[in-house]
Every structure is written in C-alpha cells, then in structure tokens.
Image 1 (spheres, rainbow, N blue to C red):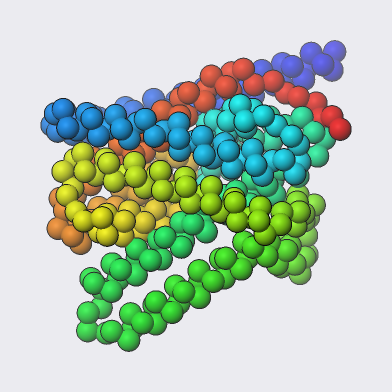
Image 2: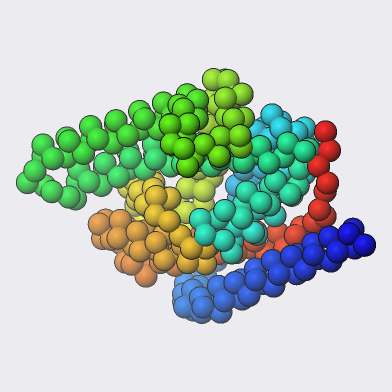
Amino acid sequence: MTVVLKNKGWLALKLLVFGLTSFYLYRAVQGRTDWFALLQEHDNARLRLLVFMAAMLIPVNWGLEAWKWWYLARKIETVSFLRAFRSVMVGLTLGFITPNRVGDYAGRILELRSRRRIHAIGAIFLGRFAQLVVTVLAGSVGGFYLFWHFYWPEFPWAKVSVGLFLLAGNAFCLLFFFRSTLILAMLATFPPARRFLPYLRVLARYNFAELGYTLLLAASRYAVFGLQFGLLLNAFGVQLSILKYVSGISSTFLLKSIVPSFSALTDIGMREVSAMHFFSLFGEPELNVLSASLSLWFLNIVVPSAIGLIFVARLKFKKGTE
C-alpha cells in the first residue's frame, strides 16, 4: 500500500513539473512573437547559416556541462556520461521553473542511486561556482575595457581604483574556489548556516588538480556560449572587432550572472537590457542586439528545456543504495 502511494505521489509530482514547464515554455514562445517577427525581417541565407552554426553548438554547450557534472559526481557515485547528461537535462528542465535555477540541484540528485546522494549538493554547488568564477574573471576584464573607454572619462584615477577592486575580487574568487575549505570554515562560524555543512563537506575532497580541471571545463563551456552569442550577433548585423565582441559579451554574461532571477522565463529581461546597453556603447542598433539575445536564450534554454521534458517523463524515483 505504501509503495502504491509513493508511486502515485511520484507520478503526480512528474505531472506537475511537466505541466508547469510546458506552460512556461508556451508562455515563452507566445510572448516572443516580436522575436519571430525579427527573424522574418532578417530572413536571408547568411542569417540562417549563422543561426544554424549556433544551434549546432547546443549539444557541445550542454555536453561540456554534463562532462563537468560527471567528473564532479565521481566523489559521490560512479555514473556514466549518458546518465550525467540525462541528469543535466532533467536539472535544466526543473531549473526552468524555479528561482535561480535551484531545481537543477533536485534534477541531478534524483538521478543518483547512492544513499549519500544528498551530498551531491556540494558537487553541484562546486560546478556552478566554477562557472561563476570564469564568468567573473572574463566579465571583469571585458567590463573594465568598457569602463575605461566609456565611463568617467574625466576621472582616470577612479578607473584605476575600479581596476584594483576588480583585481582583488578576482583574487578572492580564485582563493575561495581553490581553497574551498574556507567556505566550510565561514559557514561553521554562523550557527544558522551550520546545518548546511554536511551537504557541502564533499568540497574538501577535491584536490588542486581536480579543481583546475573543473575550472578548465567551465572555461570551455563559457567559450562555447560566448561563441554562440558572437555568431548570433553577427547574424543580425552587429559587426565589431573581436575585442569589442568579447568585452560586450563578457560584460553581459557577468551582469546576468550576479543579478538574481525568478525563473528562466524572467531572467531574459536582464540579459536583453544589459546586452543592449553594452553594445549600444559601440553604436550598434538595440533591435539587432535584442534579436541576438533572444535567439541565444531560445536556443540554449527553451529548446533544451523542451527536450528535457522527455527525460522528466521517464524519470523514476530510485531508492538510495550503498
């Protein structure tokens, strides 16, 4: 009787996730009729080719994320790459409807079989932290380039101060990433946060080489994501030098990463606004940048989330084993 109730509860939960995600996807597509209109306005062979090239990088983008998760999850449980990829897709779909993509944690944990799978929270956190570190490092360089050339021209020493501040921030990010025990020590000093320590203790099990490799995977994924954005910007007529492309893209990604979002449906506003602002500094039409930004979001979030629904529907609750 208990098993039947658990199965029915699990089925109800899957149906709820499936229904919510489908609704959000429908809202996303329905609410972006302006994007489809822009595609028709720019409809030509060159645009189709560049958009196709960006689309072909979708499996590379999420494949690198799956590889990073496969690598980190080994401290908790040995998983195959296919299982890691499936868990990433499930996490992406669940994250589509949750604030700051916290559903990503649940999606990946549910795919594990070990009784210690709750400790995977630490491994997931480390993977996301690695992605944030890369975003901060690249975004600081790109942002400083924009700041130096377009902001406060009459206050050069203020620019130097900002540069030193960014340099110190990057140093702290790297320090906390490679010495993750500092994070555990900080949590231990705050009584309300101590209850999270058991889930994050796995952070101390990664050595310097493993952390470096994780950061390399995060950087590779960041490069693919940036390349996609560059292709889409070029597709919609944004013609710039490599340096300007990189500075605008990295600044956009940085601002998007540090601002909280309610869900994947609502976070596109920040990406669009920041991208239009930064590229307008180079004199690029905001409508062209908007088209590229919406395309990036559609290709990398909406399409994979829709595919992830297939894996959610097939997801089975696995009782933890040793």
